[in-house]
Length: 309
Image (tube, rainbow, N blue to C red; front, side, top):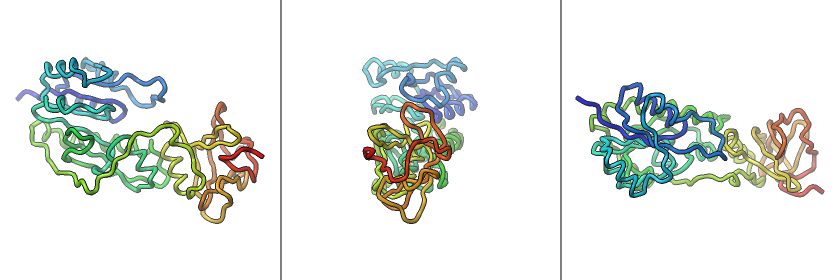
């Protein structure tokens, strides 16, 4: 029996790993649709386009795949299957319906929780102890289709979003390989999502990394590890100058006024409840540094988020 033709929408590290799984399984990938890299984004992940080109798979990077011209182009290809692996744009239902054996998406959470954008960052920010990946049937609404399979992954207390993402990449490939035969044969499992348990979160902007020192130390710590490298980072200000906090640890016990520098070495800052010991920081326009070096210039009694007195 001939292999079904597969159209792949993919980007980022999950896109690379899942496309590689299809290639190594000798699936017939007729084309890959991906994105142009954003010059304002730190590109730390492998290139889906480069992988596809290495195996002579045609690559396309349309601004909008949902234009009438692109819908007709996809229709002319007559794909049997569609996969979406961390492709960042919504794909119209009209396109999903072109593939007779269905369209499937790999999402970075245990659906129905954390539908939407950057689910791993949100899970770390909220202090979750586990998340996972979900392979699901694609429907008109984002991340709402029946579940094919899931894989749970643990979130350690000191995991950053990138740490968790690397676990999710491995889990995504495992799930895809586990279900590939069923999907290509048209017998993929279907388990409806429980809408009463659904949560949805949107994308995050750099400004969302601003630290609110009135929050408790654990909450601020979760923000720091959720948006640290390679993401834009958690930050605060003093006298109008931005200070990025790349690594910290929460400290229980008495503190001071929110944002108050309790000690310069070690660098401890009071939160609404408890305090944070700052491990790595960076003044805007300067190199990142270890707070333990004592060259950060902050003094006990100063209050982050305020003007210097």
